[in-house]
Amino acid sequence: MPVLNERAYLEHAVASVLSQDVDGPTELVLALGPSGDGTTELAHRLAAADERIRVVDNPAADIPIGLNLAIRASRYPTVIRVDAHSELSPGYAHRAMQTLERTGAANVGGVMRAEGRTPFQKAVAHLYNSPVGLGGGAYHGSTHEGEAESAYLGVMRRSVLDEVGGFDETIRRGEDWELNLRIRQAGHLVWFDPQLAVTYWPRESWWRLARQFRATGAWRGELVRRYGRRNGLRFFAPPALVVLLAVAVVIGVLQLTGVLAGAWSLIASLVYVPLIAYALLVIAVAFAPGGRGLRERLWTLAVLPTMHIAWGAGFIAGLLRGAHDTVDASRLGGRNTPLP
Picture 1 (cartoon, rainbow, N blue to C red):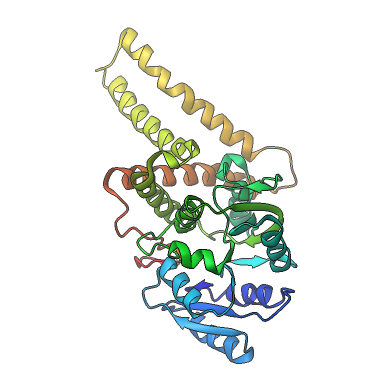
Picture 2 (cartoon, one colour; picture 1 turned 90 degrees about the vertical axis):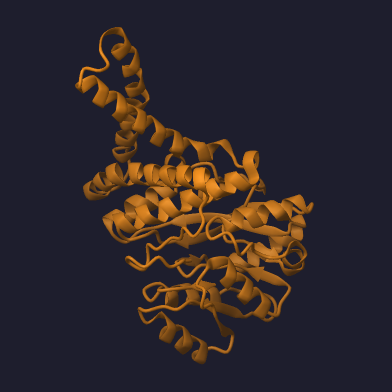
């Protein structure tokens, strides 16, 4: 478990791990980044209270570096990746290890079940679980078990991780997708089991969400630079929206200033059609039937475009000039520090 500034979530995440029913010995290795909110002290208190918990320092704070440090410090043949911002469902580890044996897969993952506590966080969670929000990946809500492109978090065979060289430490976001690509290229199976569920708690504010999605989009653009067509077409929808918005702004300015007029202005106005359709889609998602409160629905009107536009803008930047040192600083205010 990579950990950095997770004081509000760490104890629940650790409890969900330690309560797992596994045949045989277990351990929880925390890759602890330099936190400033009391997480470091909490992590060491938890480790002192339970001999199954071990702490390794991750001064760089990068996720893949922390994961590799924790894996190298671990002692057992099955590696279960967990997140301090998540909680494993009861029976998760037992079921996942059974699925590993049943399928012969190298990596098994399940559903990322996003949940929220506030109206804003609930709106984000609803969109995480929606095909309109983060659609495409099986782990966002598919009910069909089978071979997968990637796995959320993942329950992995240590021997395969050693074979493919572990996580790529030059990739700060999307490291799980890249690892699973190498696992599949090595001839191994990645498997999705919808009976596995992990509760994920999204970012708690609009600004943090926007920063997270921009960083994630930038690294997907970097992965497209590196791996090209191996990336699914769904990744190109948000940047297409950003391009349409930019073109629409330019055309709008030209029309208002009279530079574009007559028949050409009418033809150029066609660019507004998909944007109007998108706006109607956002409204339809926000006010779709269901037991959600008004504040959550109103937040959805802001959250859905934020997710798409921030991700798309980051993607374009990452595609054109690379991600370089772009990181998700959404959990540390203004500090440009990598986060889990």
